[in-house]
Image (cartoon, rainbow, N blue to C red; front, side, top):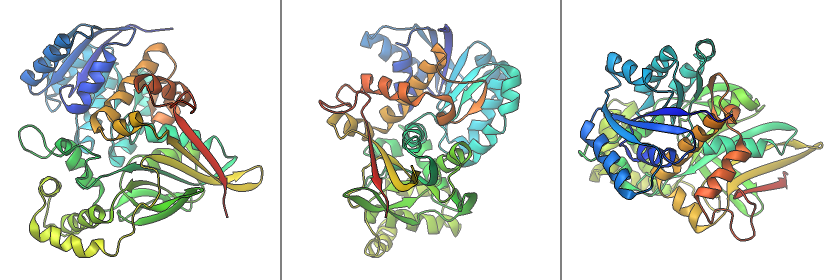
Length: 413
């Protein structure tokens, strides 16, 4: 049964939030969207722009909310049925907003891409159930679409040994959009600061079936299907944490970056300087947007020893295990179409669109059980990819599957 909801879009004026607001405004059952941000003028500008676009949909209004102001945050949440939270970095703000949503009985979705708060938020499951709240954590591209691709890959196996998700990084590190590294005021973006957090220190991954903490940027060489082999690199992300809980791989699991040797070498220079205390996440993020000559030179030497992605797909999930007693590898990826490439090259669209499609399932009751869940246990993967294909018209291609997801299962030597 479809619910009718007032939506609070926290961080709505941001690039990813703006996409989510645009798509959510057209969903059946959405009666109002409040675009909330600490920058009221930015929120007003988005509302004006979307109204002027003439796309129709739910009425919108702007509201000034700083998530560090507990009173303002709770007041905003009390006026909403569901919140789309795109305020990052999540290792700073994610837990605060979810706790407030549980207190006010507000359903919750976000695009959290930090593994530490993901664990903490999943720990609020019992409280959310008691409050009648449905929360989905990490409903973006990675995590989000990546988790649902992993669901499709795991479905091909009787027993899961290894499970990897992977996403593309270009030379600038922003997945094709340099603007994602800096805010309009010139400061490093929340996405860039998050990235520096997840390439430094130790990050969560799975080894021998156990959750462990290891240094990131380690190479993983994969053969995911016939003719598709290459090397990708580990990075901190929620996928290993949640897929470990959901599918219990007996071997290895990690989130990987599909990245050029030059970029991984430069990221490793930043990692070393963060770990040595020479850079903070913020100053490292600034270096990411505008590399210094000295660090670029250090990276040049390191690039000579790094392996590249070879013929790996840019965005995929792969599971290795057994089916009918035979060892096989299952690869799940989006079809090779111009629309899919455009989606993956636009971080805002690739992240904000899945968030809104997750809301669509919460609205019609398809997904979002009571409690706090990762995408793979709350969102119907089959329904999601069909919805995604409708928003990316050529995603299925002329002779591909209707939902645009290609599944390759090959014997493993």
